[in-house]
View 1 (cartoon, rainbow, N blue to C red):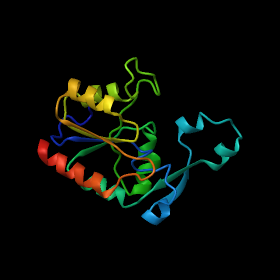
View 2 (cartoon, rainbow, N blue to C red):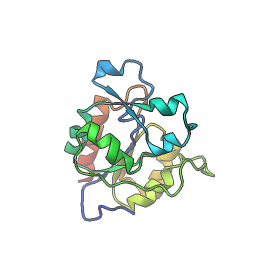
View 3 (spheres, rainbow, N blue to C red):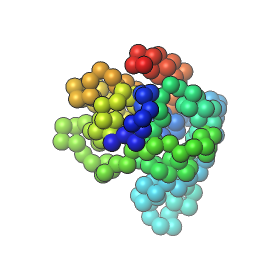
Length: 183
């Protein structure tokens, strides 16, 4: 359930990999991204101890300007990522986000949904508990959009962010625009 029930703004549910970290980008530096090496626990658990990958860490591309832009949006920002609380410890400082953001604690990670939904979708709807939300993620599909519309109603915006590009100007505009429709 939402930790921010007293705030009337819509929720902005933020995935890290894809929207903020365009992990498939070829020319990220040209677009203002800096590379960081990080060791999030979910990623680290998938690599053998002493392996080259684990020694080097996960390359994470972040654009420092995205932090202030996220905080300036008329939303309550929430981490909706497998980074979980580590997003506050590792990602937020690189983005200049000083205060910890609420986090969706996933009961189970990467669980196959019986109806083919993205594994996060049902948890997101339950966590939002009826509050309007925008969700930025690289894995949402049309099936997830339909499910959210049927179970949560019209006050949800799901934006699939291409992991080759990350958040683009059109996404920022759409987020600002949509927030104005639910105020």
